[in-house]
Image (cartoon, rainbow, N blue to C red; front, top):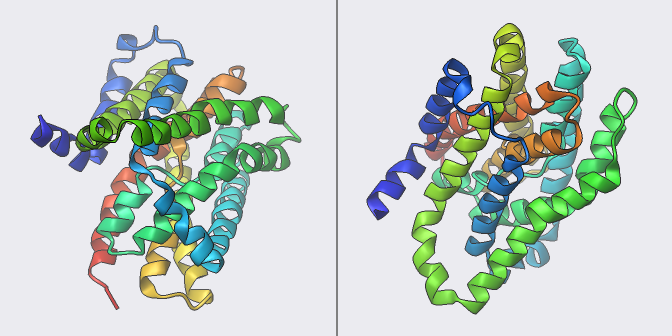
Length: 308
């Protein structure tokens, strides 16, 4: 069973891609699933994240505050602005613009720590940035979405704040408590968590694509291009930010990955929950989930070649 779980987590990008294509070809299989299911699946992923974290992981926040602050500024400035600029440059409609902006305003992705590790980057910085950006998300994500998309779409900041608390922060806290209270059980479960999270993310992608398959086929190419550019530019600009600040190579790798890889599942969850009148707003998050796992595997191979 452990070997099977390792196989699933190792080939997560391929699995998510295959699942997305299957959902696009056979949308009726999941067309009856309610979008609210996405929230529960994302909660499972976040609970797993909580089980893998410890208070030790946040020591970097206090021992290296300059690195964390620089990384978080890059995270919450580069990706939101990139999202808005790309949406304007490609003249996306309100729904797709909202979806791209939601992706840009979300915290770092849960897979970023794995990619940083494979890249031989600064893992402590990566874990610290993921934790801090996730804690900041209930406030910064609604605020940034309102600032960038609020002129054309009604953005309920309070409802989004509460959603992120329930769907992201609460499961992480429960995971931390479970690890503290049942250490033996959670230590045994850790080997299976990456596979469970991979399956949950693949299911989220499949549900979103199934519910929007027809519209995706008519306007899919342009949004795929925008999502790819968003991710690639985020990786490049994140790395450049670290270089401008004269950070070491391992730190630059960590910041590049943290900035470029978003919690796109959260973006889709927020779109499905708060912007149901714009169903296509869930699509950028689903495509990002597929693409950033593939680009992450590539960038990890490239980064791993350079250690000095």
